[in-house]
Length: 298
Image (tube, rainbow, N blue to C red; front, side):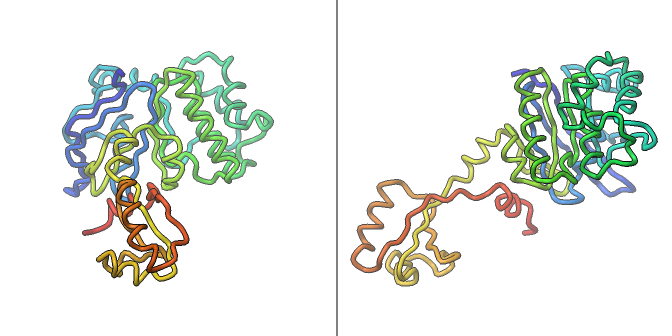
């Protein structure tokens, strides 16, 4: 696959406080890259650096194989769509008129406005003043503004804030459809890690300005294989027989760890005449739990 974005040794600081430290990141064409990290990790600063909204201290940012600089940033941004922090628009204008203005600014054909509003679920409110919109509707309009013109890269910072569960599901389907049916890639951040896991092909974990992991979600999962857990009539007795610490008893289950089928069969054979075995499960940790483990202060 072709890299649509490549970041090399990006560093940014504010008043001698380093926000990004030698960040290296690649996003492939046709992928959804989920950027996750705690508050203050540098996610928004990284996205703003790509768009030229903040000036980097050092490093190199390349889009579509061409290094971005102050001279070509404006031209480069024509192929980008973005929603950073709170969406910006004119409250006294309608949803349609806001997109109409964006089309004028970016020299985009206006025949896609209705389709874009339909995609984000706002077609019935196209002639409604934005000041009358709910928070969720404003968020949808912000996504529409980012989408208009079929950008090659969508940069979305917390795009599902303010959406109800139905709206989140609709946006999830929309983002997947965009990547599947166009040449657009997506860089997205969200604190709703369950959603990041559902849509992302790749992830980056940002902690204190540095990427602790970047790569495919599948490879990250392979680094954290599922564990086998047992529920028995006496977990304490079972743990003693298996020489496992009591700390392996979690939520009324005995955690065996990453075990093969043969290991599980042997363990059950050893326990079957000592305790009753109620359940045997393969349990996969959620991305949220792995994220907390990855970013917790140690």
